[in-house]
Image (cartoon, rainbow, N blue to C red):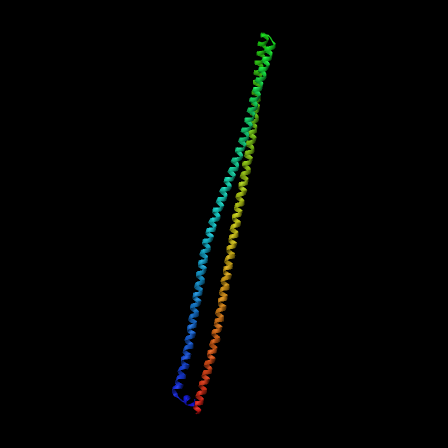
Length: 267
């Protein structure tokens, strides 16, 4: 052992080893700093790219959803308008049908009354003709004709009264139809107002949901950044610990070399 420590080449090799370790330590620090800087730059670039892509996707989704809501609103308004028009047309058709039925019923009653009157007149004429002489028969026929004319006049008056009643009923039905049209217009206005309110509330809900999504994304990015910083801090702490350990080992190596030099000088 003493012979090996006295060799000059061994002292030279130890000195070169120390210089090499110092250079290696410095180069390691520079390399670690360079790697850390590149890694941080890549992380920030990736975060910016992810934020840009998510923003574009959210903008596209919001535009599509907005167009879908507009299309749904237009379809709803068109369907409501068609339903109201169909309801109005059905009510008008029902009113006209009722008027036609009432008119037909009155005409049938009038025809039946006329037929019954003619039948009674014929029976009366026949009975009188059978029980009276010729002069009386002629007088009876004239009276029957005059009675028939009077009956026709009464029938005409009755028809005029029925027609006036029908006209009055038509006017009342027209008034009812106008009232129903006013109610339909009022309901349509209220429906449009409710649709507008619903659209406003949907827009407000969408805005709040978008703001909540943004806040959640911001919080998530903040948590990711904080966890990444914690990881980097832990890694830096580990590297500092290793660096201190290397420095301690180098210091021990220096002390060992000094002790060896001292022992060599004593010998």
